Length: 214
Image (cartoon, rainbow, N blue to C red; front, side):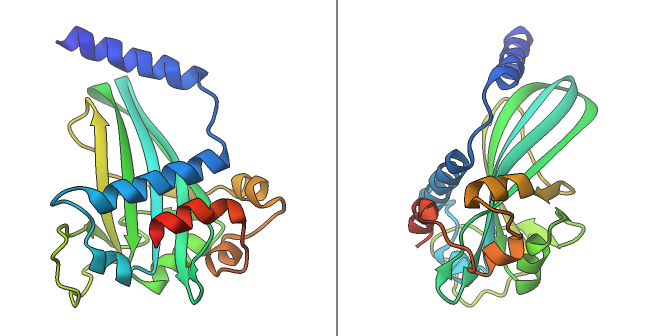
């Protein structure tokens, strides 16, 4: 049993090392797929009321590996609700390493529901956001019948969906950083997250994500 786990972890490590990095448009398409998954999971879907009241979303895919030394890395996007609908994506990434006894591999998809304007402003900076430190975070409620009038109990609601051999993953304490170079490549010029999340910057390539959010 343990032998199979080690082999799977090593294969993933070598596969990640040799795989080409995803393009920004691939990250946008993956983010759209994640939104559709989280909206349609039976009984554990993100409640429509939570999404309707959200001021923004952070959507990430995180890969965690462990073989003596554990580590994780991920990339994704942040979008915000504007007067004209959802904004275009601002690209973000996360990573980290640590010593531990865990052996295995896991891919986890996250949606962070930004419940407040302050949470959106935190992701609008050119710097970093530490989950649970800069902004309060809590596991989000689930179920399609959640009452619409429920008052959020944290600035961020976290939702996750995992595939792999680790028992569970949390991004509590993780640092999520703006990827300035990815934003530059996607929009063809230097652009600040605040411009993107305010709706001042638009690209037709982001339509696939906006359609998933509507």
